[in-house]
Length: 112
Length: 113
Image (cartoon, rainbow over all chains, first blue to last red; front, side, top):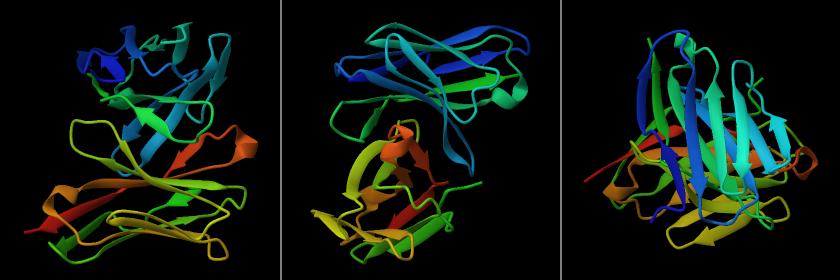
């Protein structure tokens, strides 16, 4: 079984719709991250959380919000989706004694 | 500003030869560097890392070299195999920024049989 799972894997939505992307992990890590990947830009950090009560903005948080429901779950929401939020979205986790992050399989989001 | 740059969007090598992927960074506070490999429709997977106190780290066919004075790191794959064909991302972190990872743009490596 995968350690970091993301749902849905693919989603097509319309401009203005609210959408939630979910991430779950079984690694027991406290730290969780949301990134987006756009062609030619690598991965950019949206939000990150060091524990359930600690949420931090990344470099491109505008238009997004997050919820850390439990140690194992970290959700990303687009309150009102717009076409330039079309991208690949990755969730990642990190343990306490390493800088290595472990990624989920990604969600391909298309906003029409 | 792009603090981590991979200037080659793509690289093509023959099976059995060496692949060298390069990465440059500008932030002198970075103290840990990682390489990730990404296949289509999958998330990035960790490949190898290096701390700023070292200048080389080796793991099987993969070796990462760090030149702090030049703010440059490279990943060597020897010998290259067709299964190594993927996008490779360089990433860096600084303890002073909570160890957040900053990624480069990625390099598409193609290993031809």
